[in-house]
Length: 142
Image (cartoon, rainbow, N blue to C red; front, side, top):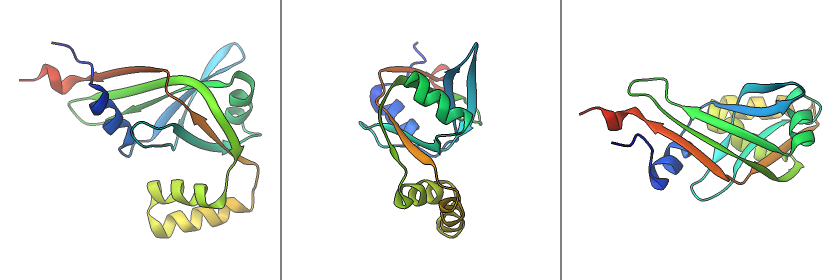
């Protein structure tokens, strides 16, 4: 039996709340770092980071990245998407507030967004998934 997820399963899993691992080329070694992300089935994956950070500079240089989301509990599952950056735009306060609220809830999300607004330089990177890699070990139980 295949452990691969169907399109509907993988999109629903990716849309759930997970801290993603962003992978991007950075010099001679790949950079893999945790990051908040957002995704709605059928759409783009989007992340926000400072353009002057290592992540931001690597994303601007390569124009490509991958993102892996996984479950931490048995049975393990993961979805990895990879592709080209389709859009880069300055991050709006609303986008940052939506992302922070997704991960921290309304009160802490608003505080985080307000504190981050003073630092500036954040960009929103959108990835149109070109390749999907999935495993759902629950398909092997039974």
